Image 1 (spheres, one colour):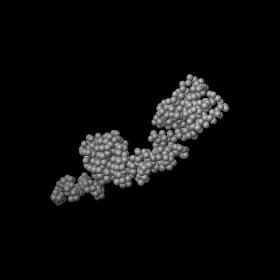
Image 2 (tube, one colour):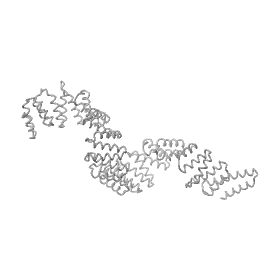
Image 3 (tube, rainbow, N blue to C red):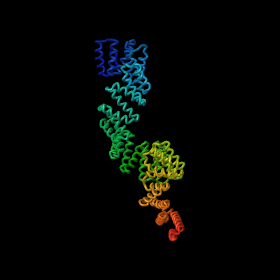
Image 4 (cartoon, one colour):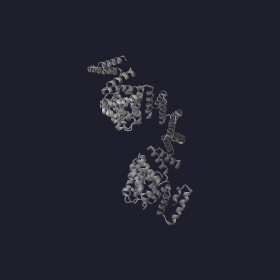
Length: 617
């Protein structure tokens, strides 16, 4: 037995071996003693010692009845020492035994663990499933289910992982393996983006295991699930709870960053800035540091501290000259300058950023902001070029659709209706869920309206109202829809739509629609109301003119003449003046002829005199 002594280096281990060997000598000798010693070393975690003794045992007793158990233990000793290739060979010997060894299930399981450790998760799954299929009564069956769940998790097959973890929970509900599986199941729901389900599951986990090793991380995931659902106040509470339980955790800095974002979203810019500053100072993660500085800049902007925000943006471009945050810093700075109407400076910032990051994925935002700067300067040609370039390079659908709509607007202002229509149609076809889709649909309708394609305009405006019921453009869309009906001379529907709207202009067109439906008295009342209450000179002038026509259509000739007379005195230079004069003269002439016909010369003379006065005026 002294053979073992040569390999010992530690006096403590030497003493252990001497003591253990001496005790075995009283009870056993030879083969059984050596195997018992090797097993004892393995069970006590001395895997290197166990390996040496098992290898000696197998050499000394090649025909031992413990042959396959020895190979299994040797394989596990090698596994725990991370010698996976030799471990695999030992397990393979057990599996290739000519007769049933009784250790096949163990060898299959540990072979699966070798595959798992080697990141060959597909083969690992095969081994674990073989345990469940061929050795259902094995002591490894529970571990196989758990390991199978982990293999699915590592493969990204999260739905399958949830099912497998759930099976572990159902079988080992009150054991640690069951608790761990329940947590992983919650985590899988979170990773799948099912944040509402994950939130409920995590809350249940915390209620069931309030003091577990995974409680803090559960609060962290619960906070992030809430954040991604827009539940910022609850999210902040969960993150704070997670950080208080486990201040040194690997996710602490991310939780701090998320709370800063949460405070920003609820408008608590002071606390948000403080958290971002703390994260930037204490984190070692470059991503978090850079983005925390960006967060500080955004908070300063919200607080009106624009100079401080601009300074931070400059700091970012100096400290992280080639990073993603630097591109964003250029963009934020340009945006702030545009908002302050410093368009020339905004152009310079955008061009500097584009020069450094022309091929960067984030450069589209710089082209976008450059387009706005040129547009505000009145340089529509350059603005169009930048918006077109931005649309090709942007990743954000909101900004892409905005850039396309602005390009469409520029084409529309230039009278290029076809190209304008192409841009708006692109938004509707590819970005129908963007915040600019309602504007695009509205603009398409306006183009058809300008082209006097009233039926197509009506369809476009109706589509806008149907597909974007919450649009901020709803009143404008309905107004243009009513105008399209008016253009098509569908006065009934025009009146219905104008009747749903507020405002002097809508009331004027409602009256016009009623007039064209021969409802002169209703139209007259509205025109009078406009003349009496409106401060819009153009509309009041038109309404005053229309009042005369209402009286005329109602066969109230003298009231018509008096109204046209008053109109001419009030608006002598109006574009309607010539027509008002001619109409008054025609009415008076007709009346005078009637008086002559009725042999009422004095009344006829009075009307002819009135005609002369009108002409002189």
